[in-house]
Image (cartoon, rainbow, N blue to C red):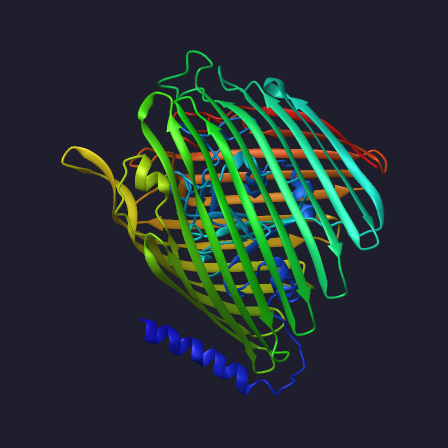
Length: 609
């Protein structure tokens, strides 16, 4: 296996060196969004893996304040679970689960969330907290639909959601304040101020949200803030620092079968993250050095108390030998872990850390007047507990014409067992990493002067060594015995009419040999956005067929969801909005036993300055 990997790498390196003296004209780019941006600053490696990008305009039209809410129905092959008007919660019955092509896990450790390329995860439990991530301060969201372990290492075996923070590009000062209120005593206020003076820019944002929930003992209360400061040192160097923080209280209302009788099922969570990044940008080379630190404190109703940390350093640089070639190099050092105890179990005490080093490289080579793209990469990770892991990835793309292209990739993903699985819940200190490989191909078409965009993707995911609980001699323990065999198809279409009207549609077919929670065999999503003078209308319809709301169940259901939002720009500074969710008033259980609200309405105002 290693010999094959090295042969692939040498092939790409050799092709690059043979072409180094050529200066072919650039007529066609495989993806203008991905090719034209600085790779090192925006954390992109593969141009052949399937991606979805949700830009700032789409985020504003959705009216979503939560990242996961903004992703709902917008990403082919992805489903998000919900249970309340606000707040996903934590622990038993929590929502905010992500299923991406059947991958996700419970808790959700197989799809990574990152902020500007920095992995966001609890050091002990190994997964993110959905309520930590808001849309205020974001420029766009990038979703790689499939293994992203080449760049992100562990926990990105099923994909990655990268949140790219905004930059203030215009001179001067500005900002906005938004306030909303509606059903179930739900209200939210949030704001952002930003400024730029010559080479110094920055912004700061904050929000406060609360709801009583649609069920007894389902209250949610949250404060959060974030900010960014950037300085251009020279034409080739700049530095940026970003920080975010959230503090929330979430009540678990219990399932319909065992509803909570009081407010005792309380979880109190505080999360924070910081990062410092230095970028360089020259004609033929771009790179960055990033130091990051994130952690949190958790006090749960079952007696769990913990403080966890995720600390690391990343350095990467890309080189262009000529106009048709790019080489990426990177190294990462990460340490994660924490301390925990239980108030109801004096014998339990956890104080564990893991340390991991990763080195990765990727080569991209254009041939035949940039019609053919070849890319290949490899990563080597070394964990102090499990030893080494090799992660290869290859891909190719062929541009038939300005309107048609075909891309394909073959990639590996993996996930280290978490400290939770090793030492806390059904512990097994001998667990090994989960692994999978994905093969996918996409046919992409632009037509009608780029008004029509169509993408058809077929994929096959196979994995083994999956960590699942097994009863051994009457004792439940995690074991490396699970397998994965998922195959499916995604269709994404978008059409923009001559008038300000756009329609976006997604369809996903997913076949799994073992059904997992939060997945559907068929999933449709249609979104229409219409702007007329100062009025904007946004409508989204979703239909999921054979939806699985709980693990190890044969009780499947069909779900229908209709959401809508109206926004009126009264003048340049003031706007009014009205949004409604589940307008069909359908009974929906994304998580079994936890029904979502019926029709719920929010009205809001926005002031810009």
